[in-house]
Image (cartoon, rainbow, N blue to C red; front, side):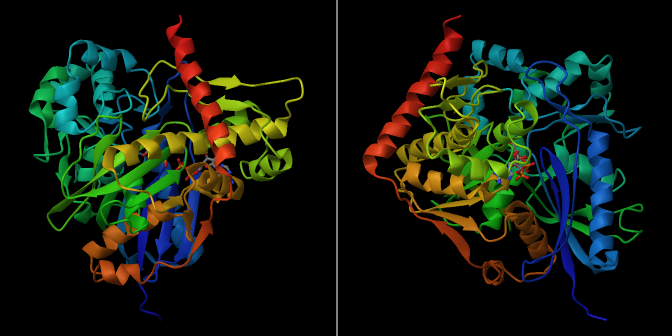
Length: 501
Ligand SMILES: Nc1ncnc2c1ncn2[C@@H]1O[C@H](COP(=O)(O)OP(=O)(O)O)[C@@H](O)[C@H]1O
Ligand SMILES: O=P(O)(O)OC[C@H](O)CO
């Protein structure tokens, strides 16, 4: 029998959970995926059932192993990667969540975030955490649960409640309640973590009245966090050896390890991350400073532009507008349209992230005529992903003075060739698409594989990276400027519409 071993990545995304098995060439040898329920209990709120996510994780693990015919003992280590910021609070005695997971997109804590701004905490929070006060991050979500679930604050003060982002929740479940931990990348998205001292920040915890006993230990992104317990791997104790938030894992999976390298992942949202090296760069232009990864006692920082609605706009075309049956059809429809006919879709369904940071704005459509077709509407929606990306990239270039040579891309919507060509055209920059679209899971596998010696070092990992698809800009300057100018008018009018109330 072959002595080949594997790394399993568990990718807990916003809409689905995946388990992917990689061999030592970085090739996918097994995969299972399961969608889970999105709850929208009130306008602007988004929640998940954390127990449903845990059940989905268990089933994708066994399906991936069974379908690839790989026995659990051949899994050398597990890398975990996750939708970030999404907040779970559970009772450590029962193992049951006390409320649904509040998802990163959810706006139910906007008032708490607004109050922090009114109370003048912007500079303190920005300086310590690198973040901009917003309901996006975990901090206000934790406070909301403690304030709204009966008896929660008393239980938290007694030390009975635990907080975790999805990585922490699944790690705790996989280890049968033995390990309550996270990594630097996830901690840096909570708005409670001091990215300079690398510690939970007591001042911010006091401001929000959050007991520190709820918080997980914070480790590097590549080390053994614990071992699987119980039956998930048929009793085999597999080390969980790497954890990173999905956007940071994608940066690592793209091997964008040098200062100045940038990637964009087009998933539910789109997240543009630039590696800024070993010192944090604070932004004055609406970008977030975050931790890219921590390995071997060293921290690498990043600047990030977070776009809240990207692939989810295409899901909206599918499920809300019923204009497409499958997201992938949007590509041919955009080509059929020939042009967008002057239509702009601004999909600000849950406010705007970088570089605008406006919690209240909601979406708008401009330029409709009696002749507007469904194909043009779909094309304009796809184009909004590219325009939002340009807003962020222009800001990043202005902030850092680093010229963008190419943009590395991945994620579900990056499979859309029309979108990628339009992105190259509107940025006037070549796009390089990873040959393996599961870059996020690959990044988590690399982090785990390094910790258990599956790969010797980064140089050995780089040998596994293969060819990429390239999209070369092919639009004249006048057209590019005309189109982008229209977008800027559309987004400014959308923001203005809200403030005219
Ligand atoms: N060919 C496509 N064209 C446009 N959008 C797509 C395409 N394929 C997938 N998507 C969008 O990409 C998203 C899924 O990407 P994925 O990276 O799996 O997201 P996540 O990790 O956030 O769950 C969905 O929102 C879907 O609408
Ligand atoms: O689920 P994704 O891939 O859109 O990623 C979600 C982000 O981590 C939210 O910050």
